[in-house]
Image (tube, rainbow, N blue to C red; front, side, top):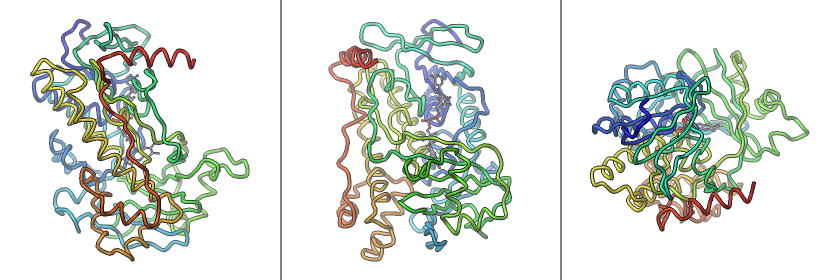
Length: 435
Ligand SMILES: Cc1cc2nc3c(=O)[nH]c(=O)nc-3n(C[C@H](O)[C@H](O)[C@H](O)COP(=O)(O)OP(=O)(O)OC[C@H]3O[C@@H](n4cnc5c(N)ncnc54)[C@H](O)[C@@H]3O)c2cc1C
């Protein structure tokens, strides 16, 4: 890692957002430095891809590598009632080309993210692992680089005209600058683990994702992976999962298995392996998406409840878009926040569409079955949104869903910080006051 200003862009985090942005920038001849706290391969949750990961993966040259990989092929999503009754699978090929977009993958993130990292490096990006970013370096109101620590505690400082915050759930910039805003309703807890030898469906349904309901709008994910492994998790309100004072993740998980007959049946022949993981504090977004010298990408921009597996798609898509916008800004010698207004608006439109469907999903008055029974013509649009085709006009769909459940208004997040810079200082002052 060079310490003087020899980079065009610094990227915090080597997840899907950071690696896709780095790949695009490097391919265009830009000097991109990715700083990653962990050493790969590293564990991550978020293993089920959706069809619209295809376009960003294709753009960064990953499709042939995915096809050559051992990742399980995914063609559909199925919903299962607590009594074990399964819907017909929603096959993506009813709406998209079977040989490209409609076939996606269930991945192991330690392997997938390492492939993304290697891909970025092949294109010329520099990736430094075991390096923690601790602070944004500022001159006046502009971010001009970052400071941090290498493994063993050695400090470093590195500078570039723009820093991309791709730090994921940690949301490095928005947390530090006081821009983070939660979503009071989508505030769930997830507990998950892995099984080997659990039951799999036959044929092309083997790699499908199953969403299996438990009471009070909680749900299991069941994600069949390669190596006879299945990722299984339960998501619900914290007060439901911890009822009667049960707090141990393993005890929470095991109690819920019994509340869905399909999950109980599929896990009965399997063997649980590894830890039981728990996370809470869910959907959130950043009030600002860009500031002088700073751009937010992937989960660092916004994180949406994972029920429809949209996270990696949004991270890859925003990473590719960020790479293009930054390259263009560098070419024109103008990286002012307003250049990223359309970037933020497009991402926000997509996330808000998905967020409406997530709100409906959790509403006690809503079910996909009832909606499609009343309006069979809407089945296609639902499959489209679930596939990740999120930048479209779904106003007809929302109008009909509103007959069953209230939907939220769009939120004004991810906008550029204007006038340039002032609010960085303001936000920090507010944060200091709160401390
Ligand atoms: C319970 C749960 C289930 C999910 N299931 C799915 C799913 O099935 N499908 C799906 O698509 N998505 C899913 N997601 C979402 C998915 O995990 C994320 O959306 C996705 O990983 C975001 O990618 P990213 O690149 O923005 O961030 P990440 O993948 O989190 O990568 C960020 C990287 O930044 C590094 N980093 C952080 N801070 C620093 C720092 N200060 N210095 C240096 N490096 C740093 C981290 O080590 C990490 O490697 C799920 C999420 C949860 C919580």
